[in-house]
Length: 492
Image (cartoon, rainbow, N blue to C red; front, side, top):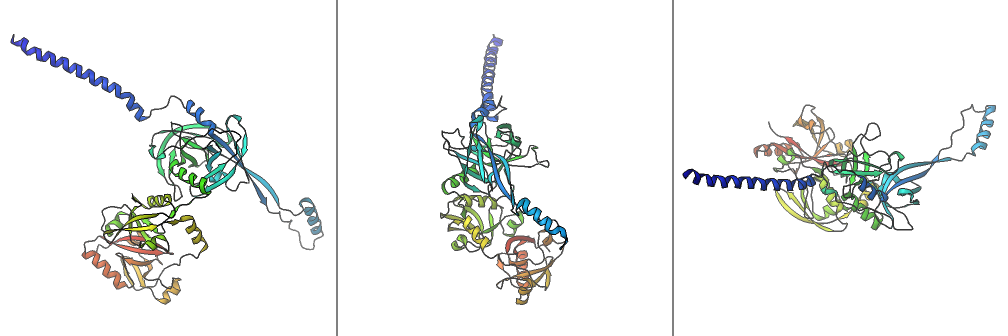
């Protein structure tokens, strides 16, 4: 009887364990599809997607009339009896008129509205006299006009006048795309129109050469002629504009780059409204923080953008100074210089924003009314370039042969009349200063965020840094008018 009493709970426990395991197995099996969906597995086919989006993709053919110089007459000795013969013969043949030839190029694009707005690369249509748009499945060809271009992001907006509503595609959110996600490219590679290729996103946030670069890297085959074509996600949304490839052969080797849609949409909106871009302008020169710069400034983080110079402009009017660390702009944290440039560029011209800077260990909030970058760049191109600073010899400190700036030295080195600081006459190649990029003719304007005009000032700043337990000292160095901060070790 005792054995039976003891066995009943064991029996129920076994039954309960079996039921629990069955329940867990059912839950696991139910989760499998969800996990597969989250992992976005390999599509069975891209055919449905290609069929749906291809009508909105276009082939672009451009032609440009290129004038050629008149070929010079053959060289014949002056006074030769053949001189008149060759001159008369060639003049009759071509009338001494410059010849011209027509050059054509191919590219891709995509329709973004039923009334005929088309996005492509600027380099596809740059300098073209005529732009022809060929539509999918023999729908015909139309001539396009250029609404606006942005060389900084290599984006152009075109317009055709269709007789009926055109198929179009929408932009997606490139920021939600992840490395490993499937993508599909459609375009006109090597003149083979309306070709489809597929692959995955290989990397995000690639930077090629531009200030506003935000490229998606993909191994979907992209070749010449694909430029300006769309890169689709699996929902049929455009998450990139195919722009460039990395290749030693000129053909696809699986490294292609598409400008992210969240950059393109802002550019397209401005081109559509204004026919040009209108980016915000803060008016500062900046550099990234590094660990040694952060240590020299007594900071625990390298986040932010370090101001190296403040020319006349919005920032100067608002009170921003060289040496300020910009940590927030218009409510957004500033990760680095590239991030600040992007945030400022996206801000509306004329908007008054709050800029938080770290100065002398404390934060300050300044209000800045933004200018327009394009106007500032144009004014800079038309104006005089900033003057340069270098200098003469007195003493070697931290591997730097320094000289105090005098009027004679300013004349010798071609410095501005108001240039102050210490001129670098020579740099020990075995020193840290050399490794950090300091070179003869550099001018040290500040040490430990204070102006220095004598070598004694400089040595006092070094001594103060050592006494304060600092491992390095922050220098503001100017070269050819461009300032930057450098941190040098002060360890003895």
